[in-house]
Image 1 (cartoon, one colour):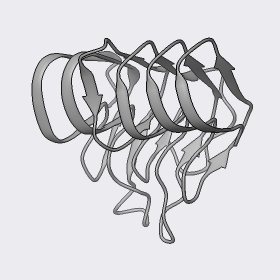
Image 2 (spheres, rainbow, N blue to C red):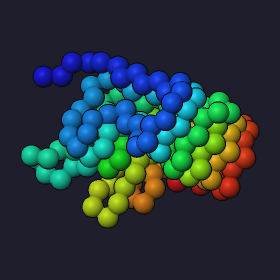
Image 3 (tube, rainbow, N blue to C red):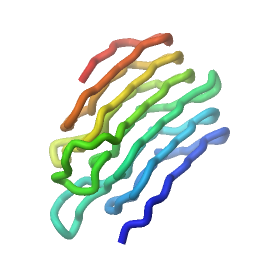
Image 4 (cartoon, rainbow, N blue to C red):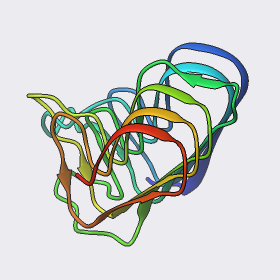
Length: 178
């Protein structure tokens, strides 16, 4: 059965040696929204979704069914690698590998901080897994120091709708719409 819930994660100090994930590990579905507020402290990576890709019926991967919102930053926040609005290998905005386009959104708001790597509106993929974004993706850069900004995914990905990148401030190496 599915129970609607909202996942709220707040980093307001301290160090996360690994990564922050808004979703499940390996397999699982969040039936609801994910909100991550990373204000102060440090982490290796931040993912709006989970960590796990679809292999087959018995290993379905990770999904976030509704909206994802990441609010990042003060001057004292450091992300040592990357920020992803989507999942590491999983999918968001739907609950299956073959979901339809949805009205749910992924929104990444970078207000300040130092992101040593990159900001991706979408997810992390590789040669085995293609993360999917079933709704629109919004990346809003209001400040901070960032390697590069991408509206979409990194190594592999499949946006189903539109990517929007809005630059209001900050110091950025490169900006890519996809």
